[in-house]
Image (tube, rainbow, N blue to C red; front, side, top):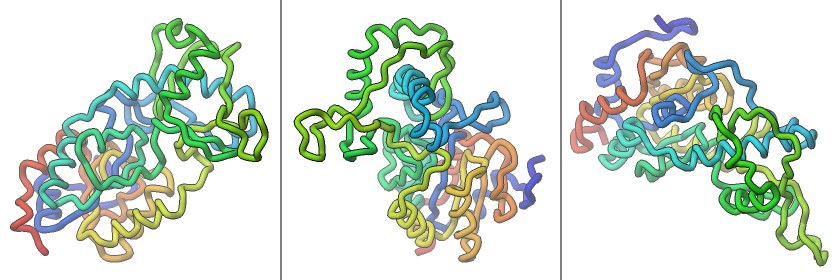
Length: 294
């Protein structure tokens, strides 16, 4: 039983009934990607983890060195992951006109790889890095090549890596790791490189999601006839606010997650189940767009 936060506990049949005849938006979290081999922060079987904060990253040079050393190893794992059945089911539902779009708290880009077209990467994306001084944007592969030059053999020498969320990895020591700074031309007109601080294009805890991104997500929710939440405990406000928005506007809400969520009390149906199996079943059972309400 999952009703720690309230909300009616239902079945797959209840979920199908709620979503049938409605075009809906999907809000996804880390639970959608665990079947692709990417761990989450708060799943029932997840070890305790402390997510990085923006304040730690910008204020502490030693912390920043540890972060980049771990990320230099961990991002390669995320870069090789592939979409699972849940990602592919959502892409099919969008192709059929039932899913209007996906708002994802994940940074892994697996929705896009699966074929979803309308995707709002709420917390950013792991494959881009920007300079906090001049704003120059790099691909993560470019930064990896730079880090390889500064730390020859480091990634190859790390064995038995435990992969962590958000392109992170758990490694024994980061001592001596050299962090890359911005090598783009100085934005102030100097003759040398910028030397600004590089940060992945990921929204850290304590950092604000860009306003235009939030606005687009609200507009997507407002255009929907239902909101489906999949694979997130909604522990942070950045995702929960869209559930509140739907509830305030009388838009039905369904939640599929392993365990209780902070959004359950706003939901019309909650289902304690895996997302891959449930989303696949929805793609098989929901009526085609021709039968959906217009």
